[in-house]
Structures are given as structure tokens and as C-alpha cells.
Figure 1 (tube, rainbow, N blue to C red):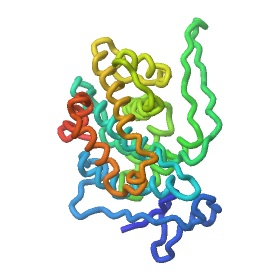
Figure 2 (figure 1 turned 30 degrees about the vertical axis):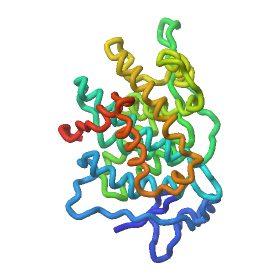
Figure 3 (figure 1 turned 90 degrees about the vertical axis):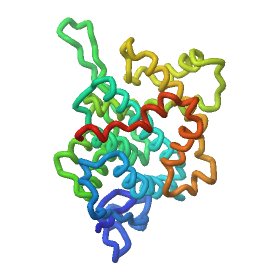
Figure 4 (figure 1 turned 60 degrees about the horizontal axis):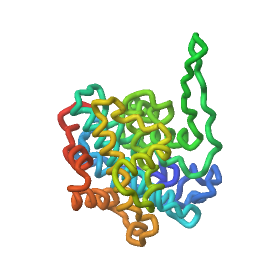
Length: 302
């Protein structure tokens, strides 16, 4: 059994009850006094890099989401949207992953995707200057490709991810690969799914608006997504792309809980509360219900 700091995911001494790393660096968020989280491997549990989605959820609900709550929902931060972003991104990423697997795509790593989505926002404690974009021009001088810069907070998230994954016993190569999905530009399939899941969550900006029909919502969603949502862009997958955009927008409206006292008190079961919305209203979430709950990753090696 080990203990980690809910602020920085550094190993901590339970007997001392404080985080030496935060104390030594003068952390203004917790001063080394933030709650410690227990990291324990259950007897008979599969290795972290071989677990299915159900095994992963116990880590997600018992350690990672409580860490977000400690980290962001305190007297200094009061950021109650962060956990919402994370749990909704988890739903979106799993649905898109299962769709791509069913469409025949191979060599995707469900484990890498899950942990990258779960840990992506942990370093987002402050607003960093927007990273510069790098423009590559080909030999003709006509075509240009814009490569996303990586902000300081995403690099902090990558570091926290590596630290946590090593603490729970994940092999160094796998921990580095997951950290790399966050640190590097999203050029790998799993990295694209991580980005797409969080880009979809931008649709919360439209949650207070009303739209006459799906085409009207899709038109309003386009500038919000900023051309960065790359899932199912091929013409053959147009229906799937439009379905998840519309259903994501509806889910934003139905889970706008940041000011809800019940959500702020919600400990274990934060993801399950979002899942319950899908389950109770499955008729209006056909894409998400089919591809999120019908988890096919059990049949694939990670």
C-alpha cells in the first residue's frame, strides 16, 4: 500500500500526514496539507496495463476523481466544472473508441486511452500563455500544416500521469507511452481520441441555448469545435459524427451541474451519475448508449 498527495501525485508519508514535495516547493494551493490518497493493488487484480474497463473504473472512481475534487474544488480553486469535463470526456472517448474498433480499426490501446483521458486535466491549475503554433510549409511553398503547441498545463498533466502510473505499478514503457500521449501533439490514434473527447466538451458553451433542430445545433457547434474535432470525418461516417456531436450537446444541457449542491458533494459515483442520465434517456442518446455501454475492449488485447 502506498499514499500519494492529492495535489501533485507525489509519494507521501502517511505517518507524517503531509506531502514533502509540496512543502519543499512552497505549494500555494495546499502548503503540503492536502489530503493523501491511498494507492493499493487489490489481491488478484489484473496488471494495470491488462485491465478491462470495469477494472479501470474502480481506480477512476476511488482515486482519480477524488483527487480532482481535492485538487480543484477547495477554498483556493472553487472550480466545480473540472470533474464534469473529465467524466464526460471519459464517456465520449470510450464511445468513439468502440465505434472505431467496430469499424475495423486495429492496434488501438484502450488502456492508454483511458488513463490519458483520466489524467489529462490534472495540471490545469492555472491559465498559461497560449502555446505558439508551429507552421510547416512543404517544398512547393504553398501548403502549410499547423501543429498545435503544448501548453504548460498539459506538460504538468503528463508529469503527474507518469508519476501516478509508476506508483500503481504500471510498466515504465506503458507509463511513458500514456504520458507521451499528453505531452506530444495528437498524431497517434489514441491521442486524437483524447483530444476529440475534450473538444466535444466545449459544447457546454451552448448548454443554455435553444435550437430548432439538429441542423441548427450542428451549425452553432461548428465554430465552438474550431475545426479540431476529427472523429469520423469521412463521408461514410457522417451520420456517426453528427450523432455524437448532437448527443454531446444534449448531455451538456442535462449535466450542467457545476452549481448543483448535490454535484459538489458527490464523492464516489461521479461518473455513474452521468451514466445514469444515458441509461434513463437511452432513446435520445442512441449513439452514446450503443457504443459506450456496449464495451468491446474485453475482446482486444491492450
